[in-house]
Length: 128
Image (tube, rainbow, N blue to C red; front, top):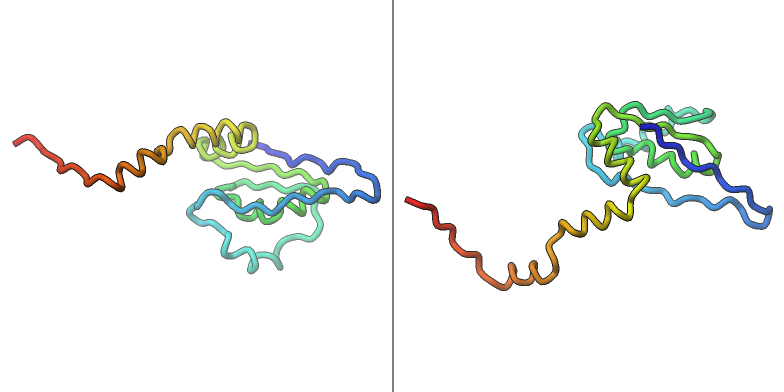
C-alpha cells in the first residue's frame, strides 16, 4: 500500500496552511513503538524528501510524523507484508464512513445490552 498525504493547499498569507491534528495509532501491534518515540526522536533525520514505512504495523512512527509531513507537503509511503493490515489502512483512508457504519452494525444495540444486564443468564444445558 502506498498512501500519500495530500499536499497543503495554497493559501493567502493571512490564512496559514491548516495543520492536521496528530493522530494516534488505532491498532495495538506487537513491536509497537508508541512508548519509544521520545527515545527515537534524536535518531530521526531532520531533512528528507519523503517517508517510507516498510513495516507499518500499528503505525506509531508514521502517526507521530504525519503533521510534520503534511505541513511540509511531503509524501508518505506505507507498506506491510500483511494484506489484511494493509486492507484495514486502505479502508480507513478511502472508506472510513462505510467502515464506521459496518462496525456499528456489529455492535450490540443499547436495548440488547440492557436486556443482558437486567436478565440473569440462562444456564447452559448440555445433552447427557
